[in-house]
Image (cartoon, rainbow, N blue to C red):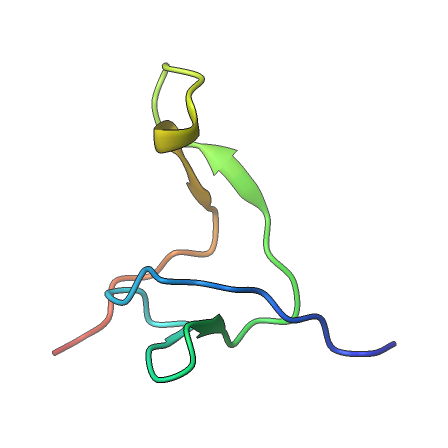
Amino acid sequence: MSRQKISCNVHDCHYCDRQNDMCQKDEIKVCHCSLEEEKEATMCDAYRKREA
């Protein structure tokens, strides 16, 4: 299986390669993080805050 390219500009996520705006994971799951079903309320389920 070839590696997928996942664009990402969530630079405070541990998995985001900030230099290339790419996710380091091979796959992600997208989920709603609030009751509102809008684009702004959707994010990657694997999000993990980057440590300083």
